[in-house]
Length: 403
Image (cartoon, rainbow, N blue to C red; front, side, top):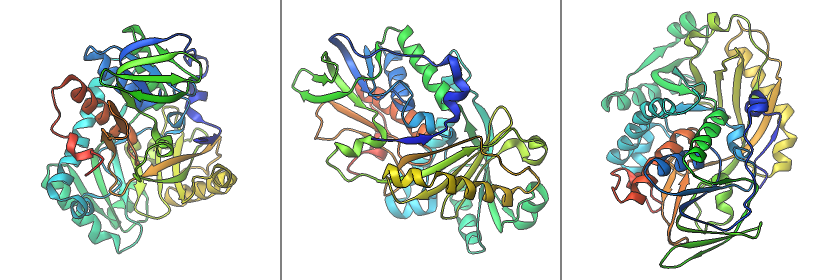
């Protein structure tokens, strides 16, 4: 599957520091085979390895070469579905527990990165969620009340305060003090380096062709010839999973992103370099980079056809640039030095799918679909580790396939 196209920022930033991993060249045995070497697979391998499992990682591309290289690296507790709407979809207890788990995950990211050989450009940021029209004001207030009910520190900012503090002309916004940003490519590479140092073989450019499970384990046949024999298998296969899973779990769409030139006065004009996103359709969001650029994304479309998606890259980059200029006119106009398109997935409730399905006995799935997929990836790694070790996880039922 063609997951992304264009000029990607993170791999270019990494340059010669990119780690390369060879294809599978021999039969291997392990406790757990992780299929997928993106950020979710790397998180899973890290957590399983630290729990004492013998892990092997396989990816059909270069490690980190799929959707991870096109991610914009937002770490948020917010789920694509607002809390008050999620309560209507899945019930109050389920929705509130899911939001609490995502809030706790932000602290877990800080602890995780402190264990690595790279800070991965992890930075704490506040988050500004903008309403687009007057009808949004009551919904933002309702969402603020629901979040405060479960202890989330959030405020509603009115139109006057937005103009005075941010120079933005919007009817209202939610101001949340808990969010982060990260370089997802560096995070993936650091996690995989740690896994290899702990003894985990990692293989790129190796496609799993067949999955044969019996009472003792799973045999994976690969296009390279050698086999992998594992007690358990984790599918961290992202947006390609619907191609082989016999469940209708998501809707595939296309999204767009760009990175600007370094912007003068960015710290003066962009308060606390907060994450910015909005309630509008098509979607829009923005963050900063360590070298003073704006990273802007959104303009989603209802197609996963790569030809249709890619034909719109220039048009969508112009639309994103214009939205950004109208939102923050005090900054220079954008020169899109990097621009790309990618496929992503949305679920019916905005929650990921984590756990097991009868189609693949002895298999676990870690599918962090949605706008905060990296946060979901860490939650998946924690839950799958606990399921594998038998310690259990109280939140596993939140994200199960049959919820």
